[in-house]
Length: 80
Image 1: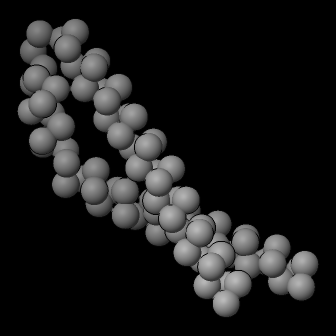
Image 2: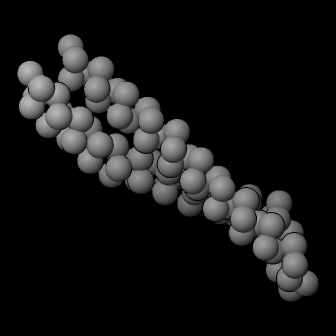
Image 3: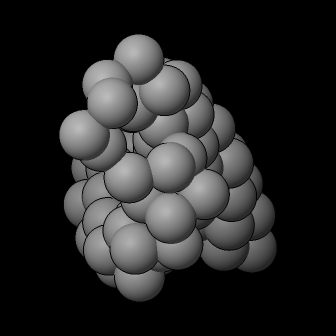
């Protein structure tokens, strides 16, 4: 039961942190577009990259979440 809890906690934390990082990067890029006259508006840019951002969010969450879960399992088994 503890391993299930650790896995859920690891993936949940990773999902939240990866989402914050991706949204922060997208906001920085969109803000940088305001200073370029030949660039699309920030809203157009964010609509254009929404699908790629969701896909990256899932992929990075699975990758980092799996690594964090493995690390949590190793620590839990070491303490047991």
